[in-house]
Image (cartoon, rainbow, N blue to C red; front, side, top):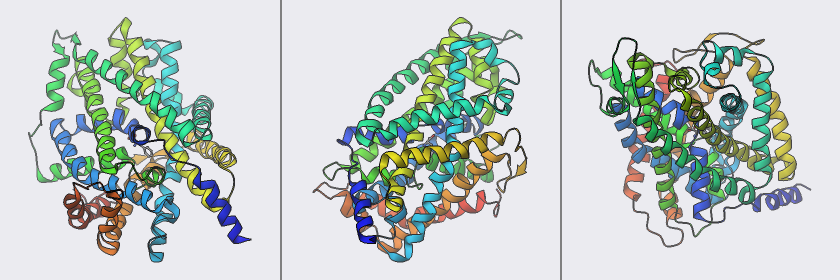
Length: 474
Ligand code: PHE
């Protein structure tokens, strides 16, 4: 009985694959490009003095980012397995790592649709109500603390995600990404260019321009730099890389397992990394100058409230055109969030197929219903289930922040650390090298890869883990 079930599970799994390397690159980039690029990257860059953060990020993405992404994708394609069984299929004793990694997308799924609901709400508000309403003080708080609206928008967002995943990897996810990702690029470049042309005279008669804002966002601010501050910026950049590239959470392993053997992995991985970094850079060029022009230097330190509170004020200050720009901006964020959410749902579906032996379509619906219930609880974290808790990294959070903390600050560095030890020291990087050269291609960055996974990544991951758990403080 068991063998036939396993066979059935295998048959169910087999069907999914990407049509070719373009489809794979755009779909993986769709997962990577999300609120992390358009919201988190610019606010970290603004908070951490612009250029230095950006510079460190670039160095890190070319080294660590590349290494982590390569590990996930290559191991996925090599084994053809999803995350739950991927490590166990190589070494029985490391089976636990797959289970640990799988917890991350499960947790993220509970709140990512809630954020998806927020951004689509803003998009709709620019269409229906205009800039004044959205820019009102307290608009964001009153929306997220209301009982019905966030749930309704979350459900719509989840329903769209489910429909696309339901249609399958090639016919749903890949096809959607092939349209949406280029559209997103055009939108973001257009709005960024517009942002650079802005000028504004504030009530004190000071004139600020978009180009000045660009200079501030790109030049490193080294005043009052201390070692501790430098390290903090480095760790901010590091943790942004995990989140932004969707690595160490099983997603890229799942997508990797759908890649054809004749696809040149190294080239595709650089393209995915480039796409993701390019969007984050352009988002900074779009967001930081606009905030600087209308809100001055104070506006730049707004942190997480940047997207939902500061930017609507910027769009209002733009006058007539602000409504259109605001709509285009949130349309872009909704697209980016949708393709990321799709990758999480697909990871859950792909993995549960292996354990539950239910058809892809049914599983998709079952997971959607469970996610809807979980996300409703997360929404209630801002009203009936409201609490405030201090997290080990020093922040005060509500339910959504707790989930975000556990998955991104606690689990990700831990999983990355263990993965690097496993690949770098237990099975050895040759396993990855072979896969990268599976059809005779050369793995040009082979030495860089081995060096980082063995010697550089593990200590840095350990520091990051200790810092985010509050064991070390800088
Ligand atoms: N990579 C996405 C971003 O930058 C975030 C994400 C996290 C996507 C987890 C999928 C899963 O926003």
